Length: 146
Image (cartoon, rainbow, N blue to C red; front, side, top):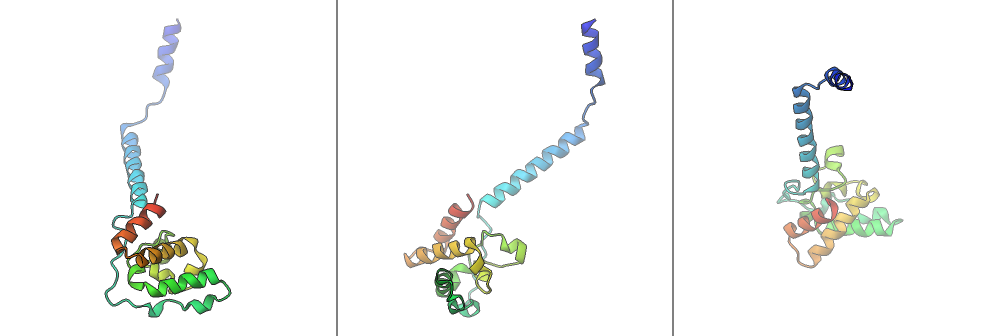
């Protein structure tokens, strides 16, 4: 009698259609791909423009009341060709349409963003040590994406 009840309860459980499982699997793969793409910097960095200058970067004197911010804006002015080739990890490209890290310093955006400020400091210090753009990108990716 116990076996008969067990068979009945097994038969009455609703079955999930195969297409639902396939859909769940596809969504799972898409989520994994998206997370992996966000964690690796490959392909995210823009190529620096050949004619880029520091002319559009906000003058550091604007931030005289915040010396640490002013210092980073001054650093940005010294390396426009480098920061124009670096992806900004604060997601301003997606949220504000920024082209590169340099775009963050063409306005007050960089002044209020610890991510932007940190990336410029890293890029500046490494460029002063003679590191290449690809080495700077790799270091920023390692620190910011992981």
